[in-house]
Length: 83
Image (cartoon, rainbow, N blue to C red):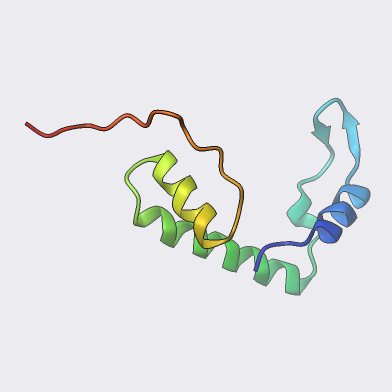
């Protein structure tokens, strides 16, 4: 399960920017025990999907399809041919 928009907004409120693009802490430091379990699950799912792919682009496509995320598709994907 991915984090909700409400959860992200809560983390951003707890950990505001102190300088342009800089925060005092990492968001994961504010997670509850349940949130930490969700984060571990998220990392495991992403890692398993990565093992099935040979390029970053392929991972983004497969992960996007699996979790119903919008993915910017390349107009012309380079294809390597084996001679």
